[in-house]
Length: 335
Image (cartoon, rainbow, N blue to C red):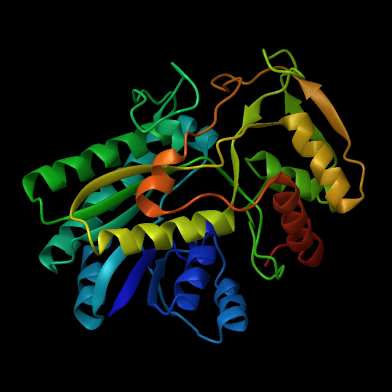
């Protein structure tokens, strides 16, 4: 039996594939390589001595999914595949609804036909929207403020309705916060296409000389140093969270929604300082106006993950920065 990983060539997906193989699972990956490179599988083989089965294709290709489920004994699916840029989603919402929401519906239909009813879904803290209270618990009202978050919210509703209609499904929805870091080998890490949308990879590219200067959007937030604060979580911690959820679903039917975060927030200036310490490089930055939709601060209540999955984040911000710098300095041009 194997685990089917959609989007398994991507940043979080590839780290999870490594963890799956190291945990003794056989892995089948589907990825359309729209924001990933096939070279990652050579790196995975170096790390694990196993080359996972890789199929290049799209989750909206129902005939391809049907063939994959016929040809492989799949026991569970981990679903990462999706477009993830907040800015791009605002500019092209139809593309995001088509890829993320319709793509998931296609996947679920073929899973249903193949009688595969175990799924771990990669969701996001963006489903919460503007905080009514902090930290975000899993019971916080859901009101996403951008298209990307809205697609995650809609998929969560589809999954909830699936379990209501058929309680035989076992589905874990993992709402994670800000993924950063890289494998401690430096062999795999975040390699965004084009200019990075997120702070940490942009910071790393400034340090390695690929970008000239970091822009800090807003220094007048109601935080200690005026810059926005986020709950950064190491990608290897997220990978272990997916394994823990997979194991949990083997024993429990129904739907579980779980935050994956550290429960602590770090400001932009604090992250820059930690990265300068890790890299021994001074990061040039400029202040700019706030961006629409950016929140002053958010972070997770991660107690439920500890309670039901036995999971908690192991790595702090210094380790996240050190691993990111190792990856970026060893791979200045990415894969």
